[in-house]
Amino acid sequence: MSESGVRQRKKSSGGGGDGKPRKVPQSSSGQVSQAQHHRMWARLVLIVGICVVVYFTTFRTREKKFATQRETLELRSQKLDCSKPFFEEIAKYSGCIPAHCGRFVSDKIVGGAEVDILLSLAKQGFRFGGSSGGASILDLHSGALSKESQFVNIYKIPEAKQIFTAELINTYKHVKEKIREAVSEQFKLNKDSLHLTHPTFFSRLTNETAKTIHDEYWHPHVDKETWPAFHYTTLLYLADYGRDFNGGRFVFIDSDGKHNKTNVYIEPKRGRVSGFTSGAENLHHVEQVTNGMRYAITISFTCNSEHAMADPQFFIEEDEEP
Ligand SMILES: O=C(O)CCC(=O)C(=O)O
Ligand SMILES: [Fe+2]
Image (cartoon, rainbow, N blue to C red):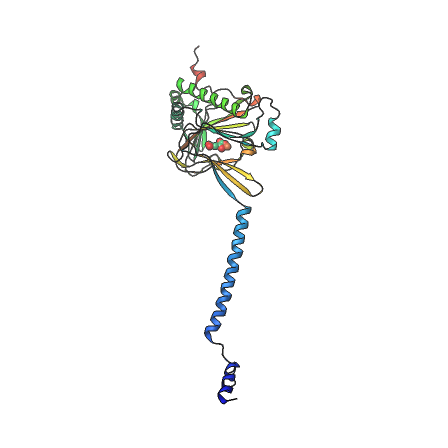
């Protein structure tokens, strides 16, 4: 073996020519730690990805529009299974048991002129009061009107008398009757078994900071749990989403299994009527209004004649001829 061959072998054995251990070159060491880094990051990304997929397939909220502002709907309806407690309770009222639970929307029940009259009443009525928080109500049956953080009786305000014209009274009665017919038709009820009940009221919602619990209109709830006499809830909208106000969409929260949810939206529109069975099958809330004023009327019905409510008396007692 030549001398140069011995030298070459020595070099390739890893030791220095002087017998000391060979230093690993800098560049080689950098490549190894970079590769480890890449592997570590790839694993991390994979784990996070799996967690995200598991989360979103387990806890999923879908969004569905039931009625948009742009549409003018003759009728849109959705059938649902009644919640057990609702069905067990309503089963006692023959003629008032729905063929199915569910919800509907129609833009053809109430006319534009009727909406104008009712909206004008709401605006004039709220001038005599109005909550200092975001939700004001005016109940024509009891006379309750929000005023700052309390309620006053509008029928005890003599100047308010002028807003209750015969035209208004007739319109209110007529509209309420048309809505009662629509509910009977939709749920296949005997109309006479369906009674107007308390509370039935005008509402005005704004983005004012809530001052009392009555101002917190955005909490999810079941109407039958809030007002046990309710069996059918209807809403007549007097203002346009996206024009008179923003936010403030009505949202049904449908549960599909334990974790999946679907938010089903109704965009308020002047003259739009929505109606639904008042049990837990129709859990809902109203989004917070971000600007403007959202006017609506909640018109509620019961099958229990003990909770039936007569038409408003307005100022009739004082108006009656001797
Ligand atoms: O104003 C609405 O759209 C619904 C209000 C509501 O949920 C209620 O009054 O129970
Ligand atoms: Fe409600």
